[in-house]
Image 1 (cartoon, rainbow, N blue to C red):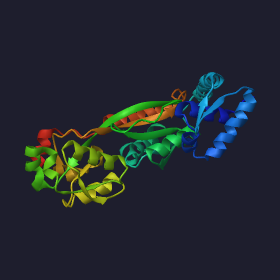
Image 2: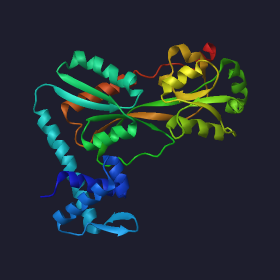
Image 3: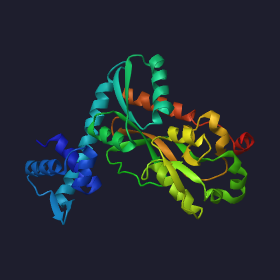
Length: 310
């Protein structure tokens, strides 16, 4: 009998292509992954892997088994969903992992609505980065991951997962009010000599600022690096530095600092579940409610309105 956890590692290897990447996804050591894969090979009674330098690839037997493993893992989730569907009511607990802005934007409204609509359903929320939320989802430690994916960053392999896009959140420029007229005339290049505040160097917002500056022909002078878009907005509110942030992180009192009419890219916020779990009544209700909340999330503000405000 093949072990389910070891089969999950094989599926990961087929998706990711390296033991190191599998170890990072599962939050275990590379040696532990290698050991479990060797045991799986013994259980299968066939040569599943071949080494090409430091890379561990799949033989034809390994590829065939990986294809069947994917179906097995989906079938397990479908079985869980089918059992849950036999209940005549929504009840129990759903664990959600979400990035920081997903908490006030989606998780809190979700809990507020479900407290009245489904009082027997308990929602447990924990804050994680998007990559950590996906890892916990794959490990079965959470049921739903709320993630954000910047449109200029490569996407993780979705193998074994279903992604439900909720909304596209544009990035906006916050700049000192005295620079707005110059920016409208010259574009982002008007801020070439000014200070910037953004996230850590390799964060999505950190990359967004550098890409925007390079597209405008300059290297932004980053003077402040903070963790969290809300903290970046707070510093930008002092008008000592410009910032590029997601629209939903900008409080209404700072709307006058937004410079309209700039295409700075954005990020897609999604709910991710394991394949086969969408039929679970609890998961289905969570996804429907998240979609409804997302439809109401982005503020309706035209460029004209923002221009008047600034």
